[in-house]
Image 1 (cartoon, rainbow, N blue to C red):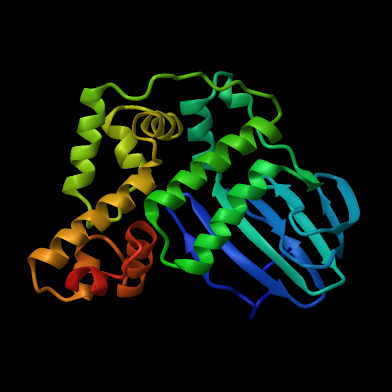
Image 2: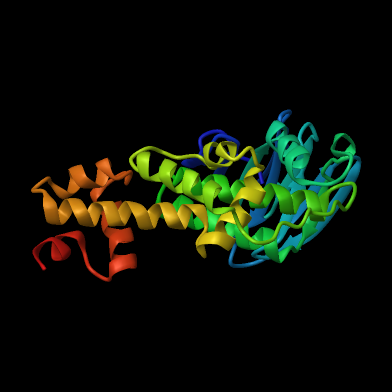
Length: 280
């Protein structure tokens, strides 16, 4: 599970996360990231024999689709694989993980570190990684709010399930107060065309990103990125009916990165293409 020279894949990036799809012929190599924690997930349809060494331990095994390897920052890793490698590599910055621990978890966060882990299964991490991979395939430019949301959930689950201690999450119920909710909704409405970050929205309420996402969904029944997409489509509907601007221009104005991106989301929400909606 190592990006070899000449086989570098496209990358999905956020402020604190980097996602790559690695496809390599049989081989071996070292892997070392001083400032990034790395999660590898096998995507190979057939099990692949691996030999791996990290943190003074060696592991050999057949990695099945969905099997995970966790390599904390500044942990040298050596890997040898005997079949055609097909895996997802997700890197989170160590600084980001520390900030999530400090904002979100009720423990002595300074002592909380990730545990190097060979060949494990984790349904939550697999689901998050799969969503990141889908976004990587369908929207390489990345929906910033969506990728930020997944990065936060990934970080929290890594800390909860694969940290040196098992921290407890504070419980917040009841959603956001109306005044706070309206402040966020107004901000989103005023910045629909921009690449909004989850961090921006959470900072409006001086709240951690993870808890903001949970409370927002309790209030609205939608995750922040889902609400943003919905509102962008609503703005596009207005412009399609009330102006003669081109669909490409409307797409970019509403925060979509292309005509096809708008068309895909528009059809998902309305069941129609933008062109069909305009002439209906």
